[in-house]
Amino acid sequence: MNTQADFAAALLDPAHPCPAGLVAWNGSDPASRFAVYRNNVVVSLVDALADTFPVTLATVGDAFFRAMAREFVFAHPPRSPLLSFHGRGFADFVAAFAPAACVPWLADLARLEMLRVEAYHAADAEPLPAAAIAALLADPGRLPGLRLRCHPSAAILRSSWAVHSLWEAHQDDRDPSAVDPCRPEAVLIVRSGFEVATVGLPHAGAAFIAALKRGEHLAAAAQAGQSVDGGFDLALAFATLLHRQMIVAIDSGPGGQDNELHT
Amino acid sequence: MTTMNARPSSVQATALPARAGLGLKPAHFGEILATLPDLGFFEVHAENYMVPGGPFHHALTRIREHYPLSLHGVGLSIGGTGPLDDAHLERLAALLRRYEPQSFSEHLAWASHGGVFLYDLLPLPYTGETLRRVCEHVDAVQEHLGRRMLLENPATYVEFAASSWAEGDFIAEVVRRTGCGLLLDVNNLHVSCVNHGRDALACLDALPLDAVGEIHLAGFAMQQDAAGAPLLIDSHGAPVAQAVWALYDAALERVGAQPTLIERDNDIPPFAVLLAEAKLAERRLSALRTALPPELAA
Image 1 (cartoon, rainbow over the protein chains, first blue to last red):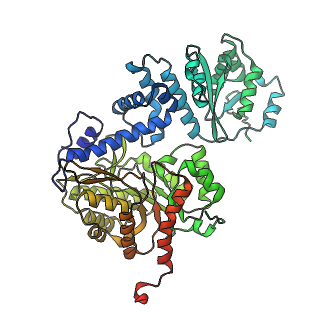
Image 2: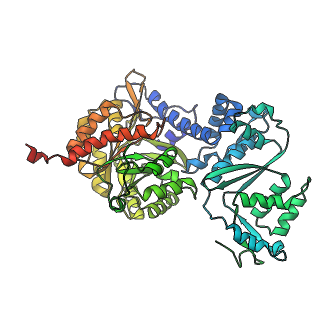
Image 3: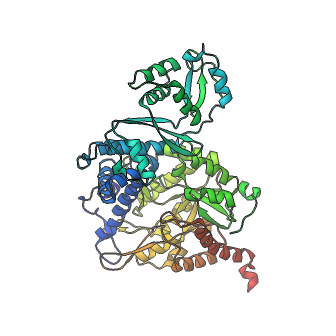
């Protein structure tokens, strides 16, 4: 029997017996000593999830969250040595976790919180200076073919639930139960400087930025915005891009990579 | 709290200074950069900085401009039965190139199995087979990274019936075969000796003390085993205990002044509290640095 295989299996399965071959100097039952390892492993992984998903935790309470996180840890033990990203599969797990079904927006709240962690650690990129952007935008003939490259931290979440309002209520210590959760909301998550911003967006604006992130040129991205009901305000969408310093490069060539403009 | 200007010579030095250092915590980035406290070095867990960008790298880059750095790995699984993770080794190599730390250390433990990462430092039996494998892994790490590493003695809660080596002899043999150094974790030594009914000074003397390149001090939590005997948990969540300071004094008598880290990873107090604890180590180290060598003092 491979000692480590047995040890590892017992760590992540509470029903698994204490591994064979363990001893204690005083002849005491090694199972209670082994339990220290099992507890350390599970508690540190659950604590890490609690750090990543504070609003998800606050929504369902500490006991429910920890029980759910334990199930996640057993079902999806980390496959990477980078603990910061163990939460990547958590939202999908929450979505399928039957006891949480009565809080149908919980999975999207978790998605929002994971995107914030991803944005915090995302690659660095210098925003283009406003003057450089203004110069390019000054030539209306070229505008439709431009590709605006967004900051690597930028992400869009479009939810059937009011996840941005719910998340914000938790930040401001307002009563989240005053929020109507059944309103679809779109959220932009982006790091400006060293702070991660979580910004509510009109759905059309979110579709526009999502298209930019896919590498669409401006004309196609604007079309994506206009295809969303409720009206698309290109000037407002641009104001968001500039205010959040999201544009890090503009590609003006047909292939998207030629004639790049950088700082 | 005293402040001082950057000391470029120690920042560029090839070894950590024989002074007290602290683990770098994100909650303290701002205060450290604003006050530049008088400390010998900072230590970071390598895995926390294996992220593409953002505030962690920004802060560490600036702090590195003012302090020597120790890079401490927790995820390489040197004691694992499987092969080393080449991708992880390459991530470590990239961090070493980026930050040029004065020291790189890892643990005599395993942390992953079959592709699953357990985020704990798990114990291994001390046998001829595990000795050979640990030495292979240390050799591979030192070769890949192009530098000597320090190996940390573990805190453990169980022993293995299969073990045929005493821990100190096992570590001494790894050091002898691979040329790696020893990160002497005095708290781990105390914890393991209490947990396994061993004599701490005898265990200290069994370690390859001439290979010590750094010392760790930390706090532990107290539990009991099934027989009611004390079972100490290496929690890094409390101040350094009196018994550990006493064992540190005994270690310093044997190895002289060494770079000494106060480790605190849980229940992290304000930075000033950690700085005051580092001063307790610094006081001992500066007394040693200024004292006459024992043969002259007699």
